[in-house]
Image 1 (cartoon, rainbow, N blue to C red):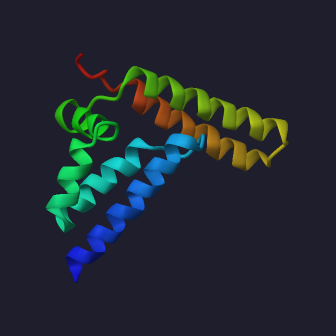
Image 2 (tube, one colour):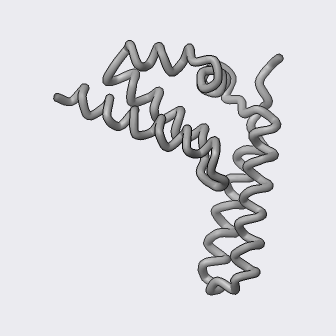
Length: 120
């Protein structure tokens, strides 16, 4: 029963990760990493599928092997976070919301920008 919940959580995370490829501001990599974690506990077959996937697998392997994030992914993430903050300012969101966004986006940006790029 416990393994089933890990599988369900993994499928849910893969779904969110795939949606994140299309939808700005929804992160892809964290959901794929979480899916790999869940599948590792719930389904070795699904874990193997995810890690060996031609498009999704390299992100997981780079993180697992090197703690690395591709340079283009860093740039896109930072640009989208800055855009979200600018949109919030444009729509005159409450100051406390803008401050929370700015703090979270800054922390995430610092974290991402300090990760190495994967070797070629």
